Length: 333
Image (tube, rainbow, N blue to C red; front, side):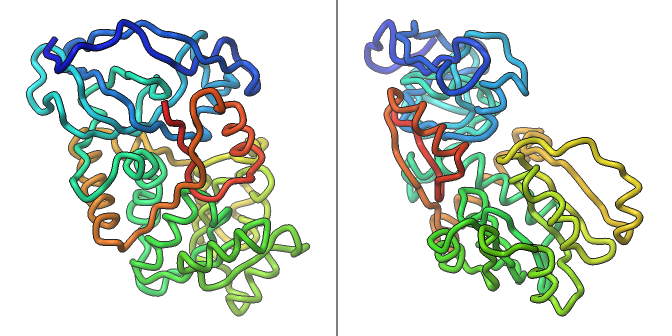
């Protein structure tokens, strides 16, 4: 192992002690691990708070307990493992895959790492990786937005929603945004949304969407909410439109009869993941390079909705799961 200055023997880590709600989270002193082949040790500046963490904590995505939570982060490399040549001590890096980011020092696989350019601070990099890459693949690969595309974006004031709205607008699309309060809709408007729908006040979201599309419906729905919005999403699509279910903030969608896609107009539906869209280091770094360029030039704004120490992680996840957040929540080890 090659390292810089002397490192502590242990440091704070956010541990999932057993599967369950946020009460199972504990901050523990964890021994520092030496990085192995194709690994580096990072002093973590910030770790992202994401719904994938919730799914892992609850056991929807089963991981043996105890484990350190967190899939996303950014920081400075303090040690590198044997045979690592593409990264050196002192490099500023970020990642959006893996496990164990919510701790003061994290061992990260080099295949999951990207360099953070000088014009992007580490907190912004941590806030942008998972949600920014998600917005990127959703708007460029899952459905390649182009001039004139009409998209419905649910939870448009959330972390993905804000970034996705900006990317759709940059590619020439029109955004119909939903959110649950006037404050959140104002945030969506500031990010470029063309039409605002408050689903806490509108009884029939799909009818409102069709009113704003002259009865046609939208080309694509980006739905990270899941159970609560799924039916309205389907009903908002034009014939042969695409339903993109990329998350389940309100819960998982129940079993679904595919014959309904025929009845509703030969609709398409997909359940994508960020992992499948950054499946190689080359694809990961290509998307991250484009994302960071957008951030550096100011073309895309990253909103940080809150910063919490590890000891306040339960409150951070309660806000996320209660859909009380705007932008990205970060844990600061």
